Structure formats: C-alpha cells, structure tokens
Length: 129
Image (cartoon, rainbow, N blue to C red; front, side, top):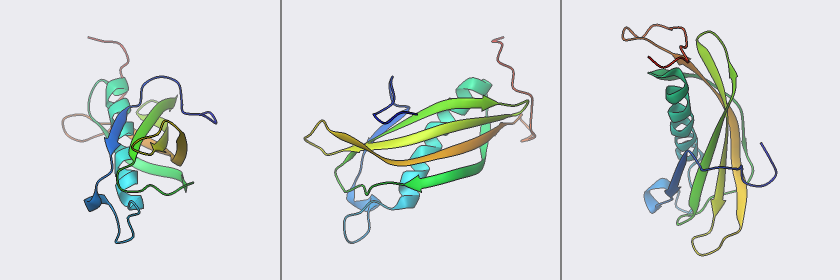
C-alpha cells in the first residue's frame, strides 16, 4: 500500500469511543486489531463468496497512537489467493474529529481460509453461481 491513504473507499470506518481506550485516552491495540480483522473478514468473505475465518495475523505494526474521538478508516486489499486461503493487506488510518489530515496508525497482513458449512476448509470458488 502507499504513503498516503489508499485509493478507494475504506472497508470500515468508525469513530473511537471512551470504552475503547485506556485511562489515558489512548485506544487499545486489541480494539484496533479487531477493527482490522473485521475489515479483512469482509474482504475475504466477499472474495470467497461465503464464510471465511482468520488463521493468522502477520507483521502487525503500530505506527502512531489513536485517541478517543478520532475517526479510524480501515482499508483492506486482497494481495494473494491460494486454493483455500487469502492474504489481505490491511492499513488503519486516523484523522482527528475536525481536521482532514490523516496518518497511518497500523498495518498488518491477515490470512483467511474459506470454510464450508461443516467448518472445514473449502476451495475458493470465484465464479458466481
């Protein structure tokens, strides 16, 4: 992904709230990671045309803090597809509530596997039925 916010629409956009923060007003890293997992999951399910589950998070990096009231936009891009798996690059960007300037706060690679109704890995079928 790029130095500026990725092109296109974010997979997820949310305003941070006090319940998402520690006593100092900094957003918990686990909360941010869960938002990134949701965004990646939306991308994976759309590509797999069905259920997909997270099997790995690779190269998680935190670049800047996020504060209560910030808007967080999460971008997800499918970068690799295997027989049953998908690798998705995810970046989270923040901006203050009343400004336009944005900065990247977190990035990671999420790996998902498409599963069937029995929760077993299944081949990814990219042809719509």
